[in-house]
Image (cartoon, rainbow, N blue to C red):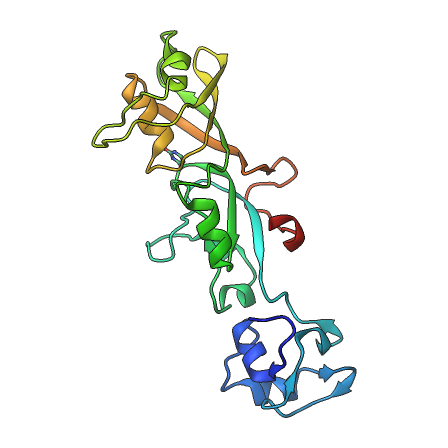
Length: 233
Ligand code: URA
C-alpha cells in the first residue's frame, strides 16, 4: 500500500488486521478512531495513513519486516499442520493482508534467525539464487569430523545428491570435532544437513545465528523484533 495515498479507513483497518472491512463500522464505535485528531465514524472516509490514530496510537506500519529467533518444533510454512511461527505474533499481525511470510524456511527442528515480511519484493530479493545473502549456522554433528570437510566445502565443487549444479564455496570453522560453524551464501533445500550427509556425517542439532547480517543474539527463543524499514533497502 502506498504511503502517501489517501485510502478509505476500512481499507486500512482491514489490510492491517484491525478488523474486517465489514466490521469497520462497529470497530469505529468501539475504538476511538481519529484523523488529524478529529473523531471519525465513517469507514468510507479517505485519509492518509500517517494522519490516523486508534485510541491515540498511530496505525501499525504499512509494511512489516521482523527478525525472529525461531524455536524448535515451530513451522515456517503457512500450510503445514502444527505450531506455526506466525502464531507467536500478535493476532492483528496474523490477519494482515498482504500476509506476513518467512524469508526462506528453517526446518522444524532448526532454531535461530528467520526474517518474516509482508514485502514480497524484499522476500524475493533475499531468497533469489542471485541474492547470495550470507547465512551462518552452528551445527552439532553425530560423528567427529574426518579432517577434509573444510576443504571440500570451500572447493565450490561439492555436488548434493540429486542436483546437477555444484554448491558455491562455503566456509567451515571447526569449534570441536563435533561442533562447527558453517557460512553459506545459498539456500538450497535442507542444504546444511545434505552437505554433511555428502561427507558421510549427520547434523543432530542446527541453529542459524545470522541471516543476511541480522543476528538473534539479543532475542530469546520465540522473541522477535521489528526491523527498521530504512535499513532494509
Ligand atoms: N539447512 C538445513 O539443512 N536445514 C535448515 O533448517 C536450514 C539450512
